[in-house]
Length: 376
Image (tube, rainbow, N blue to C red):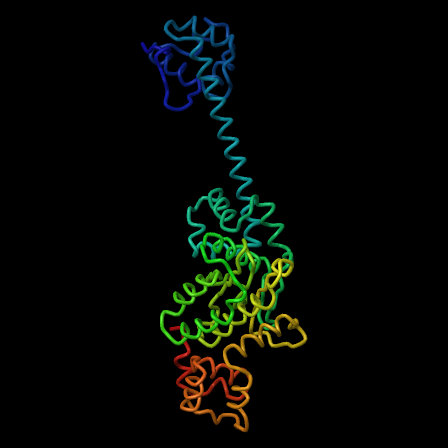
């Protein structure tokens, strides 16, 4: 015969299971226990099948009929079982709520992108939600959805390409992600008066190899944070410039792997930093750029200023005029381009890219600098 008072189950057990085991061990039938205790056979049957909870009265009656079984233990089993069931139901409700939230999140976040970024990798929805909130610096799912669905976050200026499909919540999520990554970077204090020195240092960087690493190192020295992160789907962006946590931040997507595009984007974003972050009020502004857009009616004055800054920083206006004066389209040989590029200390790919952009050369040209237009 088993002794109920000594049983300590590892997980919650319904008291009906203990009663069933005791009847089997004592070779007793349910009807006999029902007759001895006065409990209705149907009630006893439902109790043994774990369909109904045991009452205090039933616990004492059954304990009296089954010597060695403790009424207190039967009641304790029922209490633990009820608590366990409550936890299961609460966990289920939480899981259902998380799944519902996840469906909403997928409308505003490119989930596949953040999986590739190893932000979402657990396979558990509740954990992935928490990790995503952390990566985008949100306190709740409600805040995440509300902020990402905004057409234009406060202080953000978008320059987009009308030729490409864009999903604004995905754009906003990339902005938040870049800001989050930049927060952990330690850089020097930014001093706007360092502009000429910084630009001169960058010329050396862009004429060498390992450009991305050396660019980040050089910008760090002058107090500018750099985040290079590929873009989510439906996010046709080249770069961005923000003022975040007392430092300027440049974000690059490398949407195009062309070196000329990379160079121009870097100097375009530096243009925003030096031209438009010159006081505290303007530092609340952020610029998110798709540099494929050439619609003069769409381009704001600040974007035009950043474009001019980038062009003239790479190639001084007077030098460019002299280089292109009286030159027919298609008559720019690689030798001529290389000689000019060396004279002003810029990569030849940048010169070729500008010639093509200004339609002084055809993008389908056979220049060696088109074939070798990759980031070294």
